[in-house]
Image (cartoon, rainbow, N blue to C red; front, side):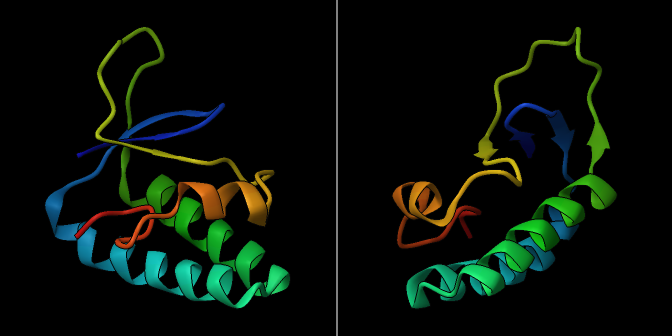
Length: 92
């Protein structure tokens, strides 16, 4: 799966890491639903850090469609709420 972090780049994520990312996404969803800004900021940071550490960065010159686009760490809770679906940011 190819994931893009807005303003940063794309990462190739192996299927074996999707369960971990889905767990972090659930934590993010709960924080967003509760309107808990500190927990939200921490959860978004953890999700993006996991994508960076588990994924393989794609070269910037390689143009590949992204399967999923994630907000960057500066994106606020109201904007992320608009992006969240029933499945969160990372679909199952």
